[in-house]
Structures are given as structure tokens and as C-alpha cells.
Amino acid sequence: MCAAPREIARHTVEHSGRLIGSRGTHTAVQETAAETGQWSTGTVAARAASAAAIISAVGAATLGLQNIATEVPPPGASTSAPNAESYDGLTFVSHMIAGSVAGTIEHTAMHPVDTIKTRMQALHPPGHSGSMISRSSLREVLRTVVQKDGVAGLYRGVGAVAAGAGPAHALHFAIYEWAKESLGGHREGFHPVETAAAGCVATVVNDALMTPVDSVKQRCQLEGSPYRGVMDAARQMLRHEGIGAFFKSYRTTLVMNVPFTAMHFSVYETAKKLLCQDLDDETLRVQLVAGGLAGGCAAAVTTPLDVVKTRLQTSGATDPAKYEQTAVLPTLRQIVREEGIQALWQGIKPRVLFHIPAAAVCWGTYETMKNVLRGN
Image (cartoon, rainbow, N blue to C red; front, side, top):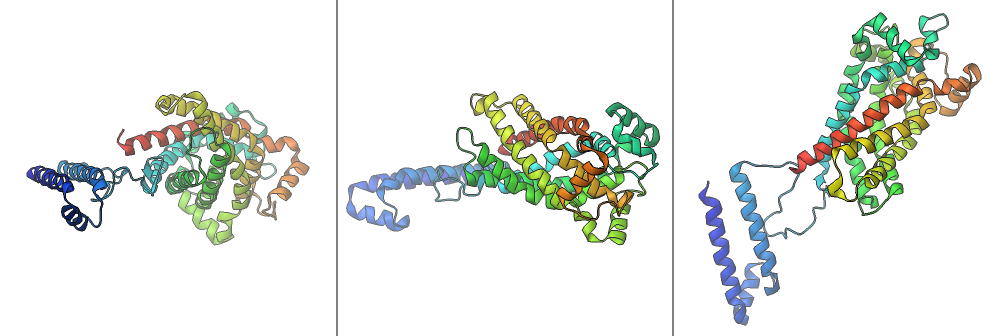
């Protein structure tokens, strides 16, 4: 095994020497073109570069070093040729791996804050002890959850998130990188429009996977939830409300997440470029700051739509007849008519507090995983 690379190197050097020596005669040039598939004498340098790529590839295989994030050029191909399936230096599958890890860590780490937000936004039947939660402070809601359900109550529904966030974010980030590359977002300079459009394309796929997961999760997060766990909630929703219950808020989620993602991704990419002079200055600290800023801004602006989404997803467990329509504007107008405009901003503090560290953790993890997969 160890002698194989040396033998290939020796053979390549000898063959290259014969090619260079044959440049003096027309007949030798014709023979060389026939051997190399009609390659001209001007391609000797490219042939030598290709041989170097072969030696490197065989040497790496000998040492057992395989990198799933890179693609070794095939024999006979120029090492300078771009990889048509690579976005930002990684393949589609590598972006999926990085996105999956980032999404899972983000949602599981921030789940307690999300539980508090859901308790503050959800509808409660009249006379229920939770009917006063929406008017309570963040600290009071946290104390109430811990007193009644213990610390474990903050993590109710986390199983659904752990199962769904990985695949959803895998496709989310991979499609985002593909769309950004296709739209020209990887070029030098600022491209907020291209970045925002790429994020919107990615969120359509992400929300199709995350909406059913989010619906089950929020049912489990309710105070006095009638479900024993994630699987029990999913079974009862399917049995009593049908498959439509899982996608009841999909339209609302898209209406909320399309502008959320457009702002989130464009602010992140722009802030990252403003915080560093060039790519060499892009440290983990820069990524965390840019991610937190992007997440907080996007979360604050889209809070009213998040309230509508939460109401639609949890009404089946509290008051199934409350919202007969699943459209965004009629539901929003009904909330304002019955509870006042302030109801649309319930949960804004925990929502912003959730998305600032969540986005920072998500982007920091994602960019770190990209560097790991590149071998840096």
C-alpha cells in the first residue's frame, strides 16, 4: 500500500518527461494527442496538475483520510475546475449536516424560553387559572410553570422539537445556500435582496416540516395539557381532529416566517460583513453578534403574526370553536376585537429573548460545523 503512491509518482514523472521530449517532432505530437484523447501540446501543464491531483488522492486514501465535505477531482480533470455541486465551498449534503446540528442544538437549548412564550400567548378557557398568564410578567410566568409542573414542565414537547428540527433545518440551510449561490448572494459586497429571497425560498420547505412538529409541541407546552407526551398528543390530534390539525397554521406560519426569514438572513449577512473587513476577520464572535442582532430584530417585528399562529395551533386543545377560520387577517381582527390591540404583542419579551441567543447559537454552530466539514 505505501509503495503504490511512489510507483504512481515515478510513472507520472517518466511519462511527463516523454511528453516534453516529444515536442520537437510533429510525429511525436500526433502520438501524444492520440494517447491523451486529442490533447494539444499546450496542455502538458494541465496534465501535470492532474497527475499531482491523482498522487494527492491516492496518498489520502492510503492514510485513510476522507473528507465528506470536499470532492476529490477525478483523474484527468483540471484541479482548477470549479465544483458545480459546491456552495460556499461545501456540497449540498454537507450543508444539510451542518444545518441539522445547528437546528437541533438551537431548539433544544432554547426550549424553556419557548415554553414561557407559548404560555403567555395561548388562549385559555374562561375561569382557567391560565387566563391571567397573558397579563403576567416574564418572571411570574416562569415561577408559575416551575411551581406547578417543576423544571421538567419547561421542557414539555422537547421530544417533538428534537425529532423535527434536525431534518427541517438540514433542508433549510442547504436550500438557502443553493438559492443564495444561484441568485448571486455569494458575490463580494452587500446583497440583502438576494439573501432575503434565498431565505424565503428555504423557509417554504422548512415550515412544511416544522409546522406539524410545532403544533404538537405547543399542545404539550400548555398549562394543564391533557396529553401525556408527544406521541399521545399526535395520536389524539389525528384521531379527533384529522390530519388537517397538524397543518392548521401552515399558512399563518408562512405569512409570518417569510418576512421573518427575509429580515433575519439579510440582517445577518449584512451585519457580518459590516463587522469584519474581509473573510479572514470572520470569527465566531462576529457570527454570534450578527446572528443575535438578526434574530432579535426579526422576532420583534413579527410578534403579532406569531400570536395568531399560536392561537390557531393551540385552540383545538382549549376552545375548538373559537377560531372557525384559519386565515391570518380574520383571526388577527378577531383577537383585536375581543382582546384589544395589546393582545397581539403578548409574549414579545420571551420571543425576543428566545431569538437573540437562539439565532446566535444557531449561526455560530452552523458556521463552526461548516469549518469542521471543510477541514479547517
